[in-house]
Length: 209
Image (cartoon, rainbow, N blue to C red):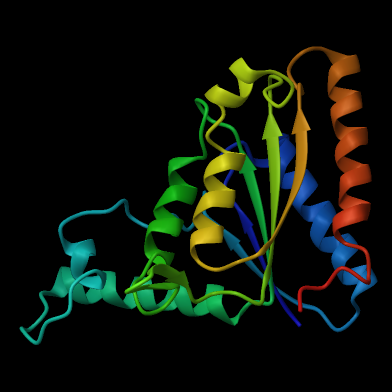
């Protein structure tokens, strides 16, 4: 079993999502001794944001690629191959300005490749990356899940569920720590709730078919 552990917070040791994603991976490995872990820190190894050269992964063609396009094609291939090879993907994702970090979005942009993670058919888009488990480990300074207003403002959990669902991943699990910036008691409650969720999503009998 291959586990891909992805972090995206820029806050280093102070990051809530990094601490929780590490707990998820450590617990998963303890419960699944055959797991092999590969780590990707998007705050350190950040894919360049999309440019005209990046679009080489979107278009077929036989014309020679420029050096910039060759670099983009190689990067996209490396990242999508790494993702597809994983049985379990654990993603640490803080909420930045109501959405995910741009570093994480840049990574996802490289994964979204027609013919690799999805394809278009006469019946509409079809995901090609099924059969794996994605665990989204989310941190939020405020509380968004308990009100319609908060849910409308949140584009972190909703986006990750949508994009990995589009890739064909049916087993998307969530660990959520919210209210971490609303005082000591709120933070303690958030981390306790997240710890309970971690136990649930990493249980030995919860491997995707």
